[in-house]
Image (cartoon, rainbow, N blue to C red; front, side):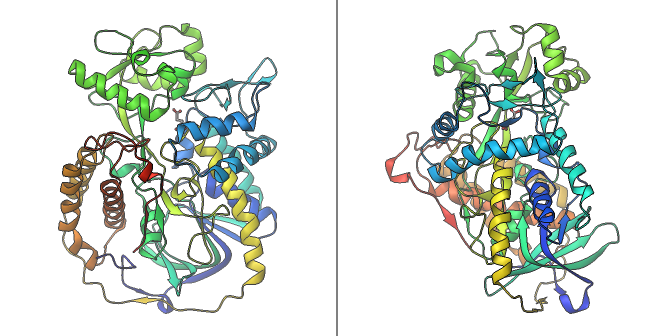
Length: 527
Ligand code: SIN
């Protein structure tokens, strides 16, 4: 049903630019990789869909995990990551993450990222399933924005690193399982362009926008996974979507994330009767792994007939709340909540894609010259449930590994010139883009949310089958391309979720509520 491309084009008719590296995405994974390669002398182009501020990295609140505390060690970080991952983490990938992560975070500090300090020492907080205080944060709860700022500053100092903002990458140019570059839409000049690269790095982030309720920026429409899958890349673990437990749930307010660090500092979850319920569900109470907190909240909501529970910050002094969580304080205040006094109504929402484009431990995909890192990639480091604050770290660690590996690849590989043509798509169809997008998101929320069943997933798959014809015709603008990408990604999530007849980590099937030994394996999908 899916075709390799979303539009008709002929590379011989289009403006062309050629680089050694074309990196798609300007969040932590893309920008860090770009800076690292460019510092080694590589000619690099970074393409971003909107601006450098429109990334999941920029929105990240809680922080970045690294074993830097006095009583901490990479071994303890390893144990916590494996425990949270519910039996599906690749131990080799985790070992790399926790060991190499320490140097990568130190490097980020050397590059100017200003994390918070407490009496001259890095201030470290806790989040769910961490046995230690090991999460660095910046400006209280604006860690991602500070990392983004530091990396953008670095990137702007390097002459051989170019950044083109407002370029929507439509498709990868792949022939005989070799990636030669990308076809992109220049949204300022309203034209297609071709960027050839001997190395193409996907760092396009997540897929949260396929869900009605999600914490992701608007750009997170799964473009990277969709274009890679169309081009023949393998994708893995697509059924594992992490739902964040504490997302603001107030009529008229956006799905704004209330960082897990708030619970790390002592906030409690309470039901509509004001009762703290998490100790009844897990010994770690509010700091249980994220998937367990989500399922416990949902049970409590059903038990009490409520649409949300409450996050109570009253155990924390008001000045600590304001100083530690200024962004959350401010945002909640605009919706009439004084979080030093008022409990925050919260419910789970889609937050992070554990699966993605399958790579090895060096970021290589099954397509030569195509690499992936950050949220779009899946090398198994997060298993079935990512440990909080491991995602920014993952972007750095596996970005670094791509640099090392791809430089070896560059010296061993002589590119040939290849032309690409697509002329078989039918003229654009009239589609009701907003209606169909809403429908897709509602289907995903209902059928592929935190509680799934064979019946609902089968229903979702018939919805996707009904949209199949759309892929035979050209997309006529970015919104239509994004919609096609979201439909494809939604379908992959539902296919994998239907196949996995057990419950594990973030994937809960009410018709198969237990984990099964038989399913200690990954689902890999390929066109
Ligand atoms: C948060 O601040 O709760 C988000 C951290 C994460 O997703 O790792």
